[in-house]
Image 1 (cartoon, helix red, strand yellow):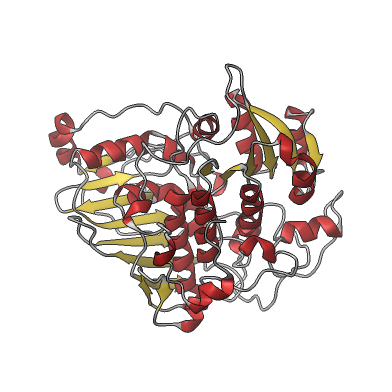
Image 2: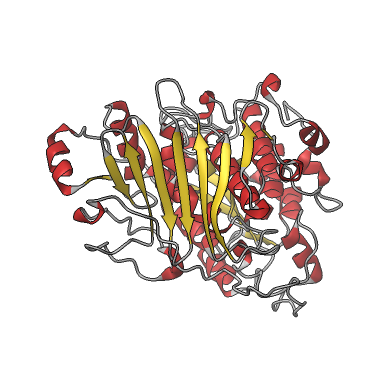
Length: 488
């Protein structure tokens, strides 16, 4: 790494401005014309990216199909601690010639020379060591959102990507290569989106992975491992996290609701709702984070409901912005007059919250997730992922119709964009340097939630200044023995 920052250094002072890092500054808001530089994948008319898939069930299986169907990737290896699961086996059938592994470290030891890039689609907490291991070997990385679990990990990952211009990185907020991305950019440049003062963001769908139990006093009891998994495989699943006995409430696919493993609804859906707002409004990091409403706060997993306010200062000629996040089935945000007079578009390429087939929003019915953007002159209604914005109320939308600029169609979806960047043909739209501050915002929100108090954050030194315990949580606890090398 060009800049080595140990966990101890980070805890002593989170200020990193003198080391050349750009994370959280204006420079981190990368335009659509910038991103990661090309990797060292050799060129040629029929050249494909040699891709290893790490995590091949659930979301990993979905990502794998996208990469396979792109025609731009040669899948050389698959890796999953639970290779015998139905999801893993279905992916393996699609790439029967790919070598199979249960431990990413073994895969890298045996095949590093045959791999150009990796897909990382595993639990949030495990993203960091796998991505760092890949980048330490000079491999390009596509990692699922929310990028990392902790503030500190996002800082280190973005620094690592920045230190090696041959590494291509992409975070899996897929809508960042869709219509909303190009629309938001064009409307911002044309002055349609300007003087934004507040944003309401919400996810009110059900959460299959949430371990509802308000009376929990300890972690779940040990259960037998799934067929084919060994104690060593489970230890690999845990990576840097503190040891937990295996339980089906963690794996497969149920880890997101636990503080030790995931980032809850905020990290899950915030990445698909706030991404263009964060990038094109050049928000950087907040100076204040306050939990306004919390239901079922406990020490183990995310609350049943939460409302969190993030406050951002003025930036250049742009006014201060407040973002208020709402999650929970019953925690419905207030909406402005005219909200139901125009139907928001729906991105039907992505699964809806809770896995229920998504219907087009109808008059007087709240969507399961979305955003409302308030500016001094206009109000915008939006959904998630690549769903475009609409102006509300209907009368204003009709008035503005002929004034709205045209914007281009996306030249590639998010997966193709990553692979084409590896081949030197495009630049990624959501590289680590762009997404890291948003990942850090999620981390700050969760720290405020767990401390259940307003936090004051120094954007220059990157410290929480009014709570020493909260400030220590920026780096969280030390990794388990044997996993320290990824943090230095």
